[in-house]
Figure 1 (cartoon, one colour):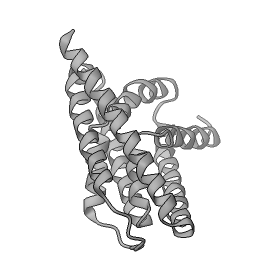
Figure 2: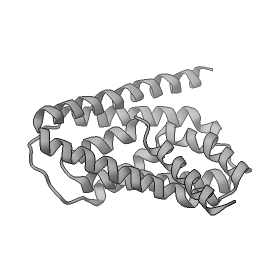
Figure 3: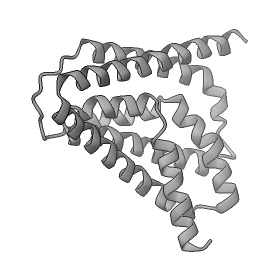
Length: 197
């Protein structure tokens, strides 16, 4: 594959995986209000989960049927997202902008990515089909696309809250809560339906 095409395709795939509104984005947005680094570490944890899912999907695609575990993935993911949404609802914006991150944010993002049905489904569908069509080259640049998107998003959210203060922070908190609880309820509902089939 021509290197320019691989770079463009890989980075576009990275943005397509990281940018859509969803549980990961909601957590990145929520953490970014108080610290760019906290939001960034959530994103890097989720990206590490993508790497693990990529290895499992591409390396063991002939031996492991992840579809057999769909019901458990949806239930665990849904419960975890409800738990996170309640934490966001209880949190208070103080206006204190801390500049440090922590390993806790990284591991929260990692676990969030590993139980996120949307992320798993992306690798089992789009990720696998891209691999079968173009090979591994685009994936070298997929993670660069994710890093660039997360860096842009965290900085933009943090600067916006610094400028507009509590009113924007409350709106972002509500957005993050609604996204997480909506996906949580949907995933639990879908998981229960899979058990009942």
